[in-house]
Length: 152
Image 1 (cartoon, rainbow, N blue to C red):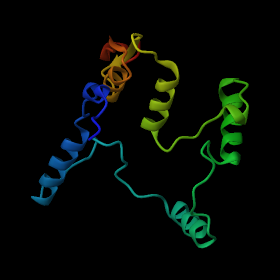
Image 2: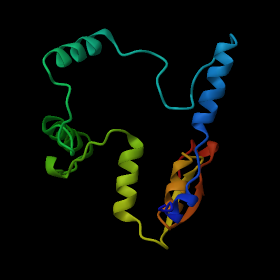
Image 3: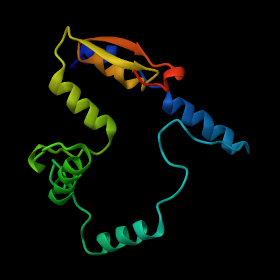
């Protein structure tokens, strides 16, 4: 039997799923809960969004797209970055990921070498130090203070 890579032992759970499970238990017991644990909004998409989704599925546009993202979306992002940040970015340099953790993990895998020191904001998402350690690097927190509006 193949053994699991040792770097997996460096990963730690975020706790968000455990908090979510407990919150769901409390809801089943009749408690009113405001969910902040998973980053999921407490409202459903607006009717026009739902309508466009229905139209897309009915038209057969419900399959995987380019692994780099829909070309028109990548072009729009490049234009947005130029307009709002004055950044000259080619759509070929834009990658659309299926969620923040995937984007973060791809960027970290591309940039971090074993033994590197990686700064991460504290407070911040628990995945930062966990994934850093999983890549064989040293996670180094830098404090964010309320009196500075949680900026460095």
